[in-house]
Length: 180
Image (cartoon, rainbow, N blue to C red; front, side):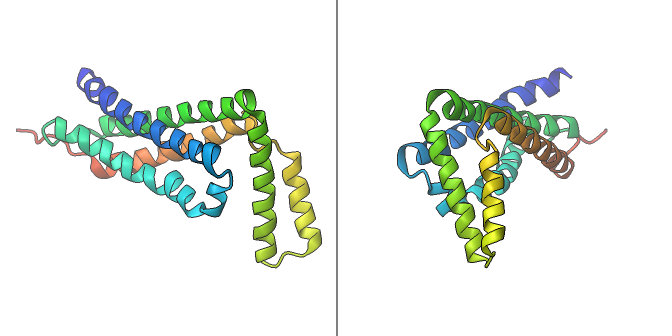
């Protein structure tokens, strides 16, 4: 157990720090630059939200394995990846929730408008009729997409995804020391 903690803590914290820096940078690009940035470049969000965690999880587990002489148990690999991804994401979500709901509620309103416009444009692009578009927009207007509860609900869903991802990465990357 001591060996697990010795590897999980530093490598998980490093992964969490990378996630925090990237997450806050993504927010600040929209906040200080173009609020529609993520909507105009939705592929960046896809890479950030779905592909980058895989690459960073592999990086963190591999880093821990190298520092342990090329070996890592399933439990340790799982701990490094899950701890880092979930902790980092939790900090970013708390930051975002505070920015939207406490520090700058005007930006929250702007982002809600951008979400509505993006949804309208996508529905129009795919040929939705006026009734379908009105219904979808009305439903979005009822939600508090950037509110505290929505932020933490999203965190819960992403945390489950990151846990499953970590389970798979740990199974793939574990390398037990040979028994002599």
